[in-house]
Amino acid sequence: MFGWSKKQGYEVVIEGRSSFVTEPGETVLNGALRSGIAFPHSCKVGGCASCMCQLVSGKVKELTDKTYLLTKEELEQGFILGCQSVPRSNVTLRLPARPVARRDRGSARRIPPTP
Image 1 (spheres, rainbow, N blue to C red):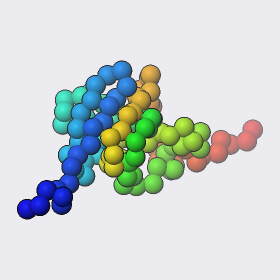
Image 2: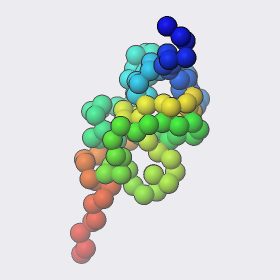
Image 3: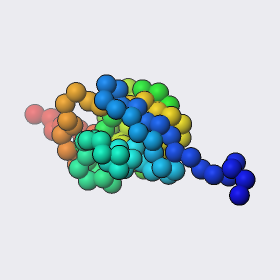
Image 4: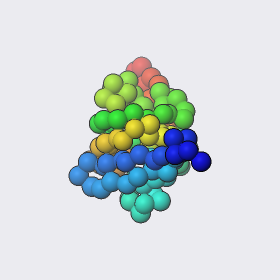
């Protein structure tokens, strides 16, 4: 009715590749796939980290806690899960140079056995 209540999508730029606009409430991964952009993924529910990418700029709302999959170093470097991140502004992302190996839930917290 009054244009101010209308939700909008945001532009997502993938460094060195392409860009797309998300639908309101849409995750980065779903927006990329809907736009025909090859985005690494496997489970689509935040359980494997295959869609891990680095948030270079902008803001996202995370739908679930990512600390069970990402290491402390990855979190400090601004990595997010594309399947669990909804843009809250225009964002720029960087995809890893190599695909991320599928991880099990809790793998970032596992402590290797001592010899």
